Every structure is written in C-alpha cells, then in structure tokens.
Amino acid sequence: MLRLAAIVFVGSLITFGAGRADAQQPHKAWLRFLKGDWTYKIAKLDAEGTVTWRIAAKGNALVGRFKDEDGQSIEIGGWQSDSKTLVVNGYGSKGNYWHLVFKKVSADGVEGTNHGVLRDGRTYEGKFIGKKIDDDHYEWHLNGKAGDGKELSITAKYTRKKKDE
Image (cartoon, rainbow, N blue to C red; front, side, top):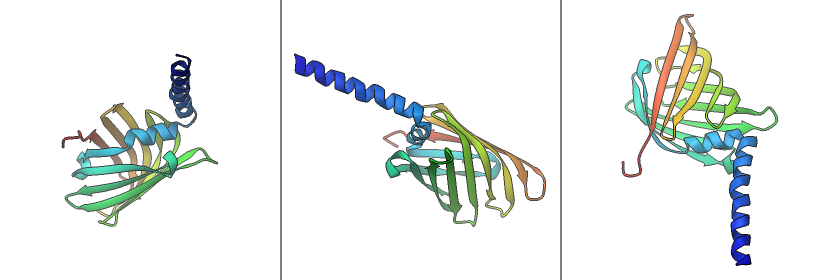
C-alpha cells in the first residue's frame, strides 16, 4: 500500500510539475500545441495545403514542412533563451520567405513582427498575431504593408488533421 501511495505521489509531482514548467516556459506549450499534421487556407493568397510540424531540441524548436498546389516550404522556429524571444524563419519553393519575431509568447498564442517576400514577389512587413482557437484549430493574422506601400491584411486558418485522414 505504501509503495502504491509513493508511486501515485511521484506521478502527481511529475504531472503537476510539468504544468508549472509550461507556465515558466510557455514557448514549449505553444510548440507542443502546433505539433502534428494540419491543413491550412490563406484566402487572400489563394493558398491551401498541409503542414506537418515536429518538435526538436527538447521542445525548444519546431520544424514545419508545408505542401500545396504551388510547391513546398520549410520553416524552423526556435526559442532564444537570452532574449526570451521565439524566432521563426521559413523558405518556399517560389522564392518566398518569412521571418517572424515573437516577443509575446503564451500557451495560447504568439504576437510579434513578420517580414519577408510573398509568392508573387512582393515584399511585406507587419504585425503578426497567432492564436489557438481550440485544440484542433489555429489562426493567424498579418496586418501591415506591402513593399509598394499598400495596406496588407492576411488571415490564415489551420485545422488539425484527424488520425484517420
């Protein structure tokens, strides 16, 4: 009986300790939420495809592989512990790229800046907000300007793929 109580106690410490660790390291909770297979739609860019995110570096980094009708992209994001910043860089087969810097990171979302080149060759920069809608839905919003000075507002919606898809 004492042995069982000790096992339950240790299990409780591990479980509740992990919750506190996430509170102290929200980037790990955010990256763990993104882990897996997703579909996405970016209406203004007419992009629709899939992404698979995998965790790396003991929960401090994430690698994403995107596929859609126009090609492929890869991104890597990582936690910079000295500046408490999550940085993400991505590169696509159309010559597009993105660079995101998140100073605000929680288990439910990220907020920061984004700049890069769109698939059509336009440069852009702006404010990026990503948020968890529920366990199976995520969306992001980019509000900024294209290189020609025109306002740019883009929204993307992601849905987690079910195991049987």
